[in-house]
Length: 146
Image (cartoon, rainbow, N blue to C red):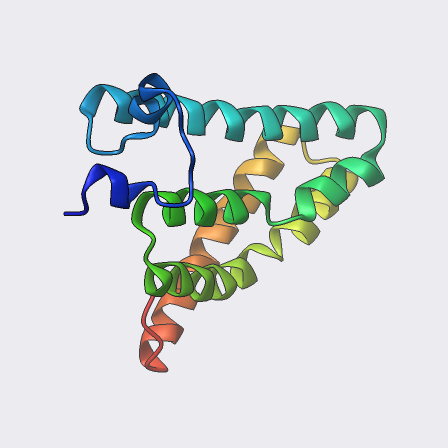
């Protein structure tokens, strides 16, 4: 366990209150930290949704960015400082993004064929789950561990 001063070597925090909010060892502060992470993540999703209403191209651009992955890696680095975990997360994300790509072709195809939104969304999600299962099975058979 690192000492408090070692734990924050690069931050020049003058206030103990700020340090307490950032302290991952304090349960109450951990809950506050979780709320902060959820709020930041939620704001990004809401922003993407609002932008998509005004311009589908810009909304698609924001949604195509790996914002959730980047945020998860930042939060994981902040929480653990473990490079190997982040490398494993990044590699796993790469392999598990591949089965999601057909979703973005199947959903619009179903909608354009006149299928209602919720049945089309359900079908596209079920297909994605099946592709996830197939990908995990194929990766395990290939010796890739996630």
